[in-house]
Length: 230
Ligand SMILES: *Cc1c(COP(=O)(O)O)cnc(C)c1O
Image (cartoon, rainbow, N blue to C red; front, side):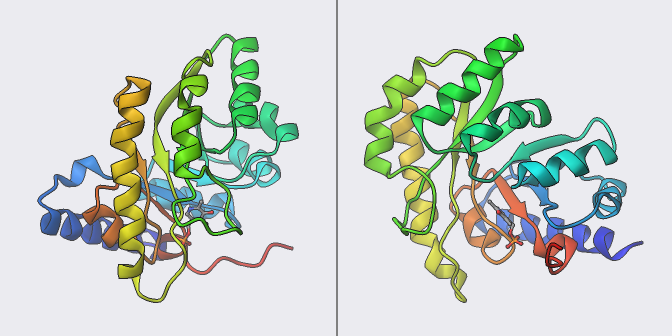
């Protein structure tokens, strides 16, 4: 068994243990492999271990990598999307996590309409209000939701957030809790179920699961330290 496959087993155990503590069914938490800065060979090892869901945060890198990976995988864009990359994003990804402005939502919809398809999206929320982070301010999101909800071809599936990095994952708990509470309010405004809560990374996934995460985005704990891009 490769190192990546054994880390995958370990992650599944960590997810199951966190679900056990929270009284949740482990099948309600999806594990995403964040393969940024790692080659298609690393993705292939994770696929051998049974993983099907992957995330990338740079369009250029994804364009070079995804065609070299197995077919039939589910790829999510998890970064901040610039308007000049929207076309590529819709071609490469089934799902865009991280819709953070009305303009980007409209630009994605325009490309989806052109291709006569729908696109699943998550709305990224900057719960902690860190100036260095992208994402909606929670109040601004609630105000903008009616306009977002009128956009054709976008399927709003839920919310995503990145907690501030901290040595102690407990510090992320209030952020995850606020995202979970915000989901209920957004769901009421949109009149849609919004089943997905994308929160939790290598360092804070247990806390995120205890707070209701349905999708954890794992890079380092699966693929190892990220090599610095050339
Ligand atoms: C890099 C990245 C991750 C994974 O981070 P790790 O700490 O390596 O698990 C998750 N989500 C997003 C949006 C990322 O950019």
